[in-house]
Image (cartoon, rainbow, N blue to C red; front, side):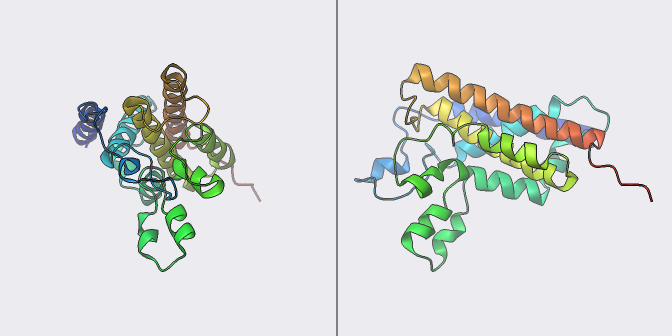
Length: 218
């Protein structure tokens, strides 16, 4: 089992290297085929890059935990809470596009969580720095860290946000609405991706140490 976990972790760490090979200057995004900014669309440079980076963030967070009862890569990855949270943070609830909902509601709810600023503030090619940051995972971890059932969900949220942010840092797309210059956006994205990885690691450490509200004795 240890060899399988080590192999999966190593494979996940190598996945971002595959994203490195993705051509960034000529890479097409949804915005390249949209003539106006009237549609709410995912901003990722390509579909697979955020997923690959999120797996890399997960692998890095898992292998950095030195506790004896730390969860393995496969144990975390195949948990439903992690998969749902990570999926909503990277590719979004894309199945909403097939439901009979209104156009604005249908497209807005199907967006990845970091791109939901378009649902609140309207369609835009530039991303909101607060949504492309560790703010949402940090708030979620503050509220739910002490509940054991929420730790995998928070870890998935951290890995999903961290992977999406890391992919944006590497591809240089989308640009941030305030920190539009590359020299300003790159440190912001890199630091926040690292913070997401650190929060995910904290969830695994808490799980290994079984931190939580102690039951009251009768």
